[in-house]
Length: 321
Image (cartoon, rainbow, N blue to C red; front, side):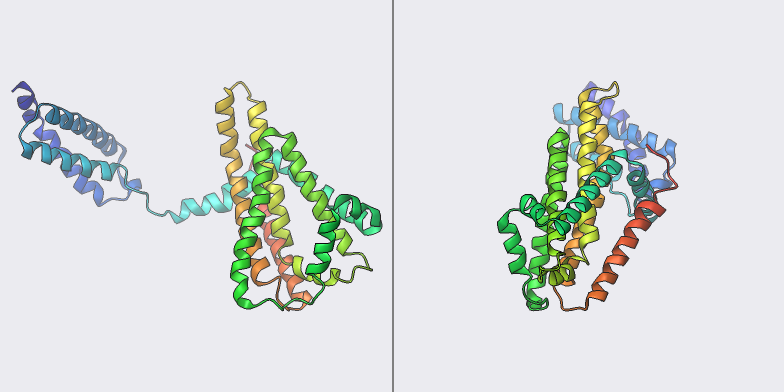
């Protein structure tokens, strides 16, 4: 009976909580005063305790049922999902993320290693026929020549969507390998440099004058190349960030340091996933068409300009983490 009396005395708090549920439902989360939110949270916790007591001491069903409904209503109000905030999302995408990318030294290292290896391998393959034989398996060279021996535009339009899905899966898997192996640093660097070496050799070999299939090859890759290749390098940078967080803890526990590194790496990996997706759309719906090469080159110039604007123009004003 003492419990029943105690709960009866708390009906005033239940009524207050119920009124707060009604008033807070009319307000945006950001418009709730701090003192109101604090009071609401305290009343919610107290109501949860009252419900536990009512259940434990088998009080009248109508009291228990009322508390169940009140606690459920307060819970939904307390943990209601945020409304979409255009301003905060706009700041995240157009300010925070590009500034993190621009000032992330792991991204700098990954971009430098990937592009220098890619360009160096391409030049060697172009000027030295023996290099492509060492950098690429014979089966890969034969496959490239077979795939691009015919003019583009022969693929049925209905197959483009299926191929775009395949490109998303295939290209993303390359990025995920660079990212995942980056935790161990050396395997991640090996994966990244191997991809840069092979891809560069493929570009250089297909650019050689005697490889007549190269014309169709460059018509195919020029449009989606900037997004896809940059995404691979970004994935490597995100993985390298994780690896350094695991090794160089800065006085934190290893797990805490890794968690902190993951928070810094996620925007980089998120940007890479977006670029892989955009590259796959271009590769699926633009690259295989019979559009004239200048149109596809214009797509590449536009893509590269977007990358420069997002990563450099938007990223430069910020400060390093």
